[in-house]
Length: 395
Ligand SMILES: Nc1ncnc2c1ncn2[C@@H]1O[C@H](COP(=O)(O)OP(=O)(O)OP(=O)(O)O)[C@@H](O)[C@H]1O
Ligand SMILES: [Mg+2]
Image 1 (spheres, rainbow, N blue to C red):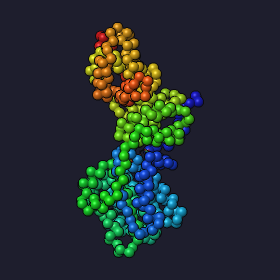
Image 2 (cartoon, helix red, strand yellow; image 1 turned 45 degrees about the vertical axis):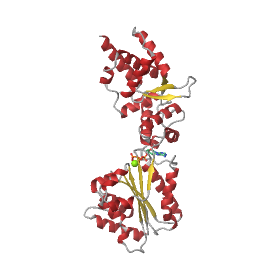
Image 3 (cartoon, rainbow, N blue to C red; image 1 turned 30 degrees about the vertical axis):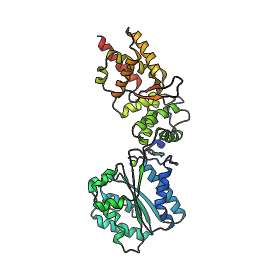
Image 4 (cartoon, rainbow, N blue to C red; image 1 turned 90 degrees about the vertical axis):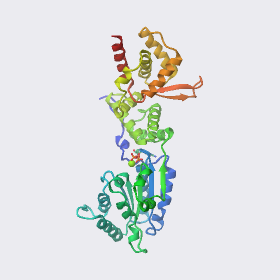
C-alpha cells in the first residue's frame, strides 16, 4: 500500500456529534449562558431559568449548548452539586413530549417505560425523581420546531409551569434551554407560553468566512495528517460555506467529503478539485440543458475556464488567466476570439446559471481584478461536458 493511502488521521473529529475541546467565536454567547445559569452553582434550587437560542442552520446552536452543558457539569461535580445537563433533540423524539420526558427520566431510572403514562403523570414522576435525588437539571430542547409543530403550546406550557404547581418554598430544579432556527415559529404558541420563553434570547449570527476558516483549521489539525490540506483548500471551503449562510456544518461536511475524494483518487493532499467533487456530490451539478443553451463562444470561454482549473489545480483563477486560456481554445477551434467586454458579459451569465462564482480582488498589482471560482462542479467533468457539446454542435 502506498504511504498516503489516506489523508485522514482521525475521521471521528469530523463527525457531526463530536464536541470540540474549544469553541471558537462563540465566547460571548458562552459567557451569556454562564451568566444566565450561574445560580445553579451558587444557589442551587433558588430559582430556575429559561433561555431561547436561535440561529440559522449550522451556526453552532447544538455544539454551543452541549459544550456549555459539559463545562457546567464539571463545575457542579467539583462542588458536589447533583447537576444533570440533558440534551434532547425533539426531531429524534418525533415531536412527542412523552419521549422527551422519557429521556430525562432514564437518567434517574434505567429503562423507564412511557407507555401507559399521561404527560401529567410523567411530569409528576420527574418532579419526584428530582426531589428524591436532590438533583438539578438543565433540559435543552433542541430543534423545538418539531415539538411545536406536532403538539402546539400545551406540553411546553406544562413544562415551564412545573414550578408554579408546587408550593413556593420548594426548590426549583428544572431549567430550560430551547433551540430554534427561526423565532417566527413562536407565533404558533399561545401568548403566555411565548412570553415565558421569550425573556432571554441568544441569537447566533452567521459565521463569516474568516470564522469558518478558524473552525476548519482546528478540525484539519485534529482530523487530517499534517500537510494534507493546504490553506488554499481551507479558504475555498470556508468561502463556499459562507455563501451557504455561514453554515459550519456544511463546511465540515464538505471538508470530510473532499478528504474522501482525495483517498478515493489516491492523492496525498486534499486539492480544490477534491472540494469541487465534494460539492458536486452535495448539490446537483449544472444541468446539461444549461450547457446546451450556451452560444458557441460562451462554451469556448467556459471551456477555457474549466481547463485553467484543471491544469493549475488552483481554487481561484483571475479573469486574465481565463481570457488567456480562452484564446488558446479559440485557436484550437479555429475561431476568432471575442473581446474582453463580450467575455465579461459571458461571465455574468455563468454566474446566473450557477456554474461560477466571482468576486473582486483588490490585492493584486493591477488594481481590482475579478477572481473566478468553480464551486459546484468538478473542472474535469465540466471540460468533458463542454467538449461533448461542442462536438455535437460541429456535427
Ligand atoms: N464555534 C464553533 N467551534 C467549533 N466547531 C463548531 C463551532 N460552531 C459550529 N461548529 C461545528 O459545526 C457543526 C455544526 O454545528 P451545530 O450542529 O452546532 O449547528 P446547529 O446550529 O445546531 O445546526 P442545525 O440548525 O442544523 O441543528 C458541528 O460539527 C459543530 O461541531
Ligand atoms: Mg443543531
